[in-house]
Length: 138
Image (cartoon, rainbow, N blue to C red):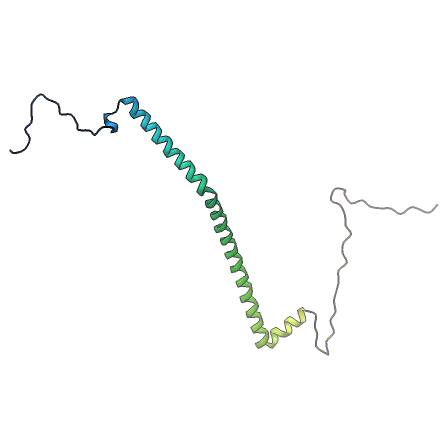
């Protein structure tokens, strides 16, 4: 077998370049890890503080867009119903007559009677109804 020969009984040391972490004492490795962890934490907090408000604004905008889309859908259904009613008014004379009657219009030979029901007197719910007696003449 060509190449390096293995010497029995000797441990082989890992080759390290000067200044690498593996060659540093244990306390220095712990210090380096702590410093890098602190840098990562500060970077994370910085990114959240930088992009956090924009993300919240983005979420509020998307919620507003969904609300406006729903409102647009409602308005479009109302428009479709009104267009159908308009088309029926142009085409269907019976429908036109019924709508005119609902609006209070009448043909020249018709009379419209309106019955208005009197409104009940206002009473408070706290006091029970009492019967009133008229004073007796002396």
